[in-house]
Amino acid sequence: MADAVDILEDELGARIPDGLELLSARDLTALADLLHDAKARQAQDLDEGVEDSLNFVPRLMRGPVRKILFG
Amino acid sequence: MSLALAEVEIVKLARLLGCKPREIDYLRQVDWQDIRDLREQAAATMFDADRRQLQRVAAATKLVPSKVTAAIGERAFGPLLAARVTGLLDPSRAVDIAGHLPTRFLADVAEQIEPRRASRVIAEIPGRQIAAITRELAERGDHVTMGRFVGHLSEAALQGALDAVDDETLLRTASVVESKGSLAALVAIMPEERLHDIMRTATELDLWREALDVLRHVSDRQRGMLGDIAAAQDDDVLAGLVDAAQRDGLWADVLPVTRAMGADGRERFATLAAIQTRPVLSSIVDAATERGLWADLLVLLPLLPAASRRRVAALGTGLRRSILEQIIGAAHEQGLWAPLVRFATELEQRTQREIAKIIGAVDDDVLDGLLDAVEQEDLQDEFVHIAARLGTKDMRTFAKRLVPAAGENLLAALAEAAQEADLAALHDALIAL
Image 1: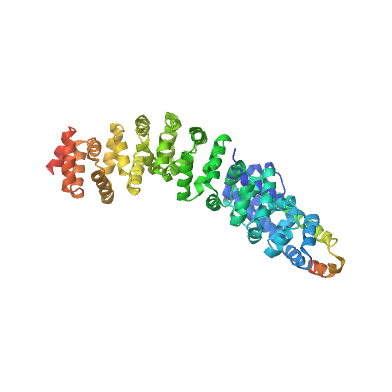
Image 2: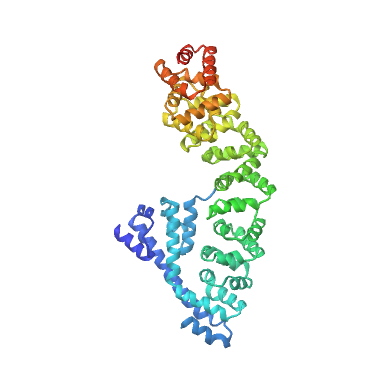
């Protein structure tokens, strides 16, 4: 149980709300997995979106935009 | 049926996590506030995880025309990332970009956005565009998303949204509004005619639970105004309200409304045929007892038909001492001694005796309040009737307390009332002093 709370708190970056302690270790771990996957999906979508976005930017502006997006 | 608060929070969390609500159904056992806290933590951590990249995207939009940015948002990023970036944009720029996006996509973004993070942008979106997005969300039956925006819209936008939805959508949305404090602003801009229609809709579509949820969160003045509008409805509409309150256990929401009504509305409500049955009166008494709402019930009691008052009195028989103390406290604090004293005379003897004992032991200021009411409202007969239930010893003690508290005139009037009622023991106790 303590492990499952730790795993979810690591994903959340915060202490879980007290009421969540009613949940089983399995449910807490499932929540941590869902959050982990959501973050991973968001990061991947963002990477792909940023890459793809350059195709829509007028050619003349691509250099400065790329510089801002990729540093 | 309305969505329970936990269910609403589960829907919102599922959207954030990109899963189906049933996948996190186990959260139903958790208090809704904890689910909301969890969602806010998850939203914050998801935003923070890519904050730097999202900020770069927001900065890059400054170099590109709004129309192009809109195309990038729609085709390259999609609604979720567009929602994340929105709060990082300059509001006027974001509004300009939104002007180039189709309503369908903006509704998708609305589903994903955290309104608090994009509050300034939302507040600047023109009313006609908010109305169009609202219509789209209403067609999807997405009351949850609409409910999240209510507290963040300008008055003009709120008006546009109100005009864009029918009464059913409005009721279903109002009951899931995230910021309940904003319901007062919503009610404030609605014309009375619309409020009448909404109440009829509540009965026709069995949505009084939703309507009463709104009444719980508006100001006292608005509650009274809405209560009066409800009281002006036809009998069938009010019967719908009574049916819903009885079936779903909502009397604790209804009682404060009756108290906030004007005198005419309250009288209409108290004399409704649907109220007068024993099961309904019993539920009302239970709600008043369990939720500390006897002050509301005391206001209603004198208006009930005599037979119903007797039923309530029968239901009040044998109330625990702590409840009777609660009722007496409410009568004192809210200036409701007269209805309490009159009601007490209809209770059976044992409960009257208990009330007399409690009154005999109350603080001086409470006794003073009661005696003032007895004198001003001419309640001497009722008062002695209750006091006479005490045993001889208790009565003597009680009479001793009355002497310094009551003036000479009141004492004489009480003694006379006791004599007229053949309450010799009480009369003698008062005279002896």
